[in-house]
Amino acid sequence: MLVPNVSAGLPQPDLARLEQLKELSRRLEFRFRDYRLYDLALTHSSYSNEPGSHRMNNQRLEYFGDSIIGFIVNEHLFLDYKLSEGQMARIKSAAVSEKSLASAARALRFGAYLRMSKGERKSGGSRRPSNLADAFEAFVAAIYIDRGMKQARQFVVGMLDSRLRNLSQSGRALDPKSALQELVQKQFRTHPVYELVSQEGPDHKREFVYRVVIDSREIARGMGSSRKRAERQAAIRALDLLRE
Amino acid sequence: MLVPNVSAGLPQPDLARLEQLKELSRRLEFRFRDYRLYDLALTHSSYSNEPGSHRMNNQRLEYFGDSIIGFIVNEHLFLDYKLSEGQMARIKSAAVSEKSLASAARALRFGAYLRMSKGERKSGGSRRPSNLADAFEAFVAAIYIDRGMKQARQFVVGMLDSRLRNLSQSGRALDPKSALQELVQKQFRTHPVYELVSQEGPDHKREFVYRVVIDSREIARGMGSSRKRAERQAAIRALDLLRE
View (cartoon, rainbow over the protein chains, first blue to last red):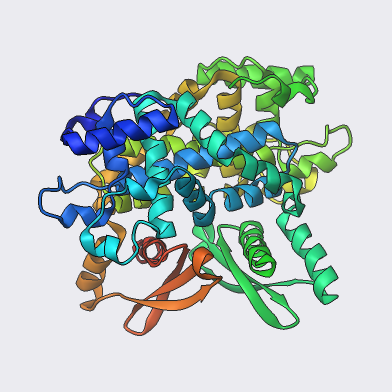
């Protein structure tokens, strides 16, 4: 896309910030064309209130980046592995979790580049997983806007590849409901039961909530536009919890 | 991407089916390179059990297509409108809802091309919104694999553009929580209240469920990895329900 108007309203980073971003670019061995985009991607929402800030933060980029990463990871799974849709959903959910993306951001040392308010920094904001994951998502959007999908894909797959590989080789590669069935059988000698909690909305726009129950104890809930999707989400969450 | 191995295992459609797909291609004024992909996209999961079927259906394509559409719609919103991330989330959610995608599929008369079991067809399967929306998602994945992102983008934006335009011009363009606040004020002369229903999981992988309450009555629930996301989802659902 490389549309100029995205960064049209953004000020140029000052010299100290520019030096910092140049250092990052060198370290990543990745050329930034428009530094303003990466500057914005590494600006936490709390910074907008600091004096001298340009009142812009990484929240829009983060929102867009989330769907770029989802697309890239699903493309990768769709092509590289003979996985069912349920398996893809499960691996993708783990690969793009806050934990996973924060860990990628930590590997890139994004905490040191993230601008935020003094209050946010003092309370540990530069190590907070949600801030790190958001910065990673926003950074991917910056790459896509600045350099295009090919570069964004290379970056995302490069950062998440070993995780994706592990996920699809481990038991996680099983369909979530089958995997949960297997684990519960082994660990508790019983079966997981799926129960409808609620359905809201008219026929054509129904939202289901299902819970998965083991030995009369609720383990997790899932929500979705069909019974299948809600149960799948509940199974994914139950697996995450039981595996902690 | 245009990777050959996606369709490598797929049989060629028989002559009657090929004629039908050629007719569709002419009507859409869109050239299919590999007919097998479009054949698969228009094959419901029930068809796999019919004698003579190739035991493959559109579920993997549907899963992948969902994230392609999400990416394209978010890119469109990110670029074309000065929308906050909350506004983008709300418009996107409405634009890619089952209702919206089923309506796009109906406009393309996909019901007539959708292969399914006799049982599924008899019970109204070719008009079922979930089947139509799934076919639309799978068809977008087929276009992307067959012809690339540029063509997929053109197709999706072409089909959803007027809907996206309406959504961002109407009140829906407001941030969901603000829009709900406004509507509840006007309609009920009170405020929506957000209440935590549950939080599950360890610190780094927490899932929040929030509900929105009006006059002590629960209207809808939302789920997400942060309070913000869960409340936003609850507000989007409440708006949909109150506007029915």
